[in-house]
Amino acid sequence: MNGLKDIKDDIQNIAEAMLSVLNIDVTIVDEDLIRIAGTGIYLDKIGERVNGYSAFKKCLEEQVLIYIDDSEQNDICKECSNSGSCKEYAEVCCPITLDGYAYGVVGLIAFNEEQSSIITDNAKDLTNFLGKMADLISNKLKAQNKTEELELEKKKLEILLNGMNKAVVSIDTRGNIDKYNVKFRESFNIEDEKLEGGNIFHLLDFIKKPSALDFEKYKTGIFYYKKQGRNLKGIYNISEIVVKNKLKGYVIDFIENKEAIKNYNKINKDYKITLDNIVGNSQIMEYTKQKALIAAKSNSTVLITGESGTGKELFARAIHNHSDRTDYPFVAVNCAAIPDNLLESELFGYEEGAFTGAKKGGKLGKFELAHKGTIFLDEIGDMSIHLQGKLLRVLQERELDKIGGKSNIFIDVRVIAATNKNLEALVKNGQFREDLYYRLKVIPITLPTLRERKSDIPLLINYMIKEYAHKLNKDVIGIEEDASKTLADYTWPGNVRELQNIIEYSINMSTSPLLTLDIIPNNIKSTYYDEKSHKEEEIRTLEDLEKEEIRKAFNKYKHYKKDKELVAKALGISRATLYRKLEKYNLISK
Ligand SMILES: Nc1ncnc2c1ncn2[C@@H]1O[C@H](COP(=O)(O)OP(=O)(O)OP(=O)(O)O)[C@@H](O)[C@H]1O
Image 1 (spheres, helix red, strand yellow):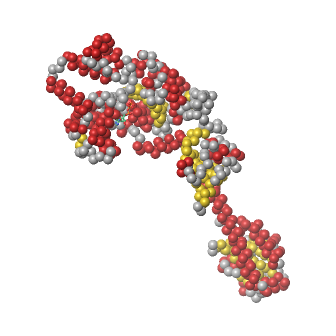
Image 2 (cartoon, rainbow, N blue to C red):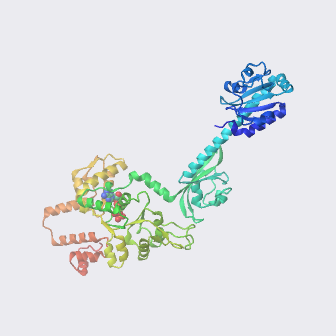
Image 3 (cartoon, protein in one colour):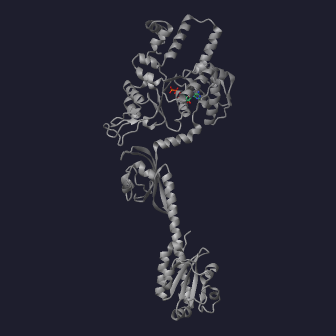
């Protein structure tokens, strides 16, 4: 809280104004009885303390107006240490109070007969006037306190704003910049001179001027800023500033995309896939999980192989989540799903004007988006030889050579690749670069098929029943034994994904709390019955056995480009013999 000394110049002006109106000397003291302002002989005594016991002290302590018209007879004067030598003829003093506290006293003092008669003849008007002056001074004090409070609030807000890890700017309704934080200035790299008095719609032209009609539609947007040496992509939000129902302006905040992903990852940490929630405790699964955990603690490239639906992406995510990159992005790219000519810009991005039709501002590649995190290159076996070369360079140099880029960008990304193809075979056929193959398989992880871990099937079934019953809002709680046995005996060429589909289908179809055999699709049941009947028949024709072995071999090598060659080799026959047999058994469509 301020005292009178903090507004002493204002007070001195008031004292002089009073003197010129009344022609009576004025003195003003503060709460410590120090003279703050004065006229006449008191001018030289500013800064001095007034006498120990005086009318001023009483006025201050008792917060009462004191009027003395005869200093020789007055009781207060008699007790004053100046009694006998006092030069004052008469005086009026009034406390300066604010919120019940006395901050000082303002007094009028007569030093001669003439001044004394002014005081005595106009006692009522003068005391009234003095009261008004005391109010004027206390209001000045109040205003001073308010100004300081506002300055303090402003300072606090500035510190808060600058401590935020988010760029923020406030504007008036026409877009003129009012306030902004350090992060804003640094993110967009705009000098203070341009920002002060600048217009946001000119400086950041991706922001469209909001209108009351479609405010809701345009209040958030994605931005791409590539100027002043900055290359930012993110999301912006506009909030209205409304005071007493009137729109006064807007506050805009910006979140960089990478941060948004990071925050998203943090929020979703609880639901993250970890090795613990990958279902399966068979020996081979336990071994695979252990290997994945070791891989998570390293920064080397991982190559996950396994048939379709064995959980390659699941393992890749779990490895990322167990690594110290977990708070940074996990970016998955399916190399087979994107045409080769687009995959290059998808992975590595391009600079503005890199080619005809290139987007304004260029494009950030997945490698850049995954900075400090993990990139998951799924179906790597389908990548073209040209891109394999580019990828190899990125892995070796740890630098990104963007299309149309002038300089290389350093990247810190961990690579996990996956495929259901036999990369070794592709290397032999010249379809996959040998050098890249070895770069990728620094830590190879092979996921077991579901057939190889049949003991996990009941666990997976129970897990999936719970999951889908909840999702589909059905009261299914389990499965009947024969149905469970049928599922456990099936060969599951589509692995866990196929099992998932069957469970989802069965729960949809089920009308009872337990899944029953009759709702299990026939193609799954037939293997069970075929095998069962085969066991009972015991003796089968050689042709039947031959047909079944051919089928089994095709099933095993169906994902290989040179499947027929591999099947023939596995069956120990020539390709020509295989073709003859396929024709004989009418299996040619396979
Ligand atoms: N052990 C497991 N526990 C629980 N769910 C699993 C398991 N393995 C796979 N899944 C589920 O099966 C589905 C297929 O898994 P994922 O996509 O990881 O397989 P993938 O090997 O990458 O397949 P593709 O080669 O076809 O891309 C997903 O829905 C996944 O959640």
